[in-house]
Length: 287
Ligand SMILES: C[S@@+](CC[C@H](N)C(=O)[O-])C[C@H]1O[C@@H](n2cnc3c(N)ncnc32)[C@H](O)[C@@H]1O
Image 1: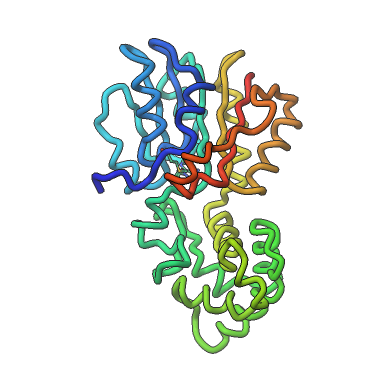
Image 2: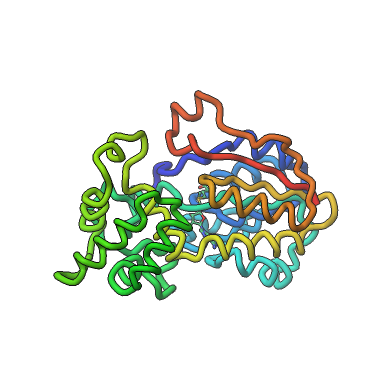
């Protein structure tokens, strides 16, 4: 896994807002393949460090043994504990680049993409117990409906949930293609000719449910605020409406000051070069 599978999104914009200076320390809560973390390290030498957290063990292994990078295979819901244990102070800025990496859809083999035929897993961290297969085969119809509607904002959540339950009575739903076929049969043909694939929202909602993403996000942001000194910055890149709403609610509840009046979105050239960036929005909070 040497080549760059995941292109860091809004990298220059993140650098410009976190504005790393010589010897400052930063935290990257979602290190992935390290695109942002390494870019910060290019600017904060000779003594500045980056503390990086990556929940996925396969990705974490790629980042080990880099100078001035303290990397841990942990969820950012343990941010405060790790920062205190490592006595990682003062922190100038913290980054959350939310969701999954291109590694997950392209290489993980864990069923993040409806474009591939893979087991329905969707876990970032293989030590956690809940998988997409368990949800799809064991949850009650009303709970499936709730997940698809709440975390996917899926218009046809009711139909998809109903068809999953009827299909699994005959045989268990095992793979991404099995699920994608059920979704296709549950929605009208007009829905299939839209810009985004008709399975996108259901898959998104399952990934969120499997990994507890929204709960984690609230917890991670809360801890980020606690470990950051006054005037420290938190940069957050969201990729869909649920993440955006969670972030905006958090900002409101904590009465925080947004440095970005409007969310920063990628330039056309970036979107051409990396289609995944098209839904990215960067917001920066100052404590
Ligand atoms: C959008 S990617 C980050 C990409 C990264 N900025 C880069 O340039 O390669 C998000 C990463 O966050 C990780 N992740 C998701 N939830 C996490 C959590 N609770 N704690 C730590 N990492 C998490 C995922 O495994 C994924 O690799």
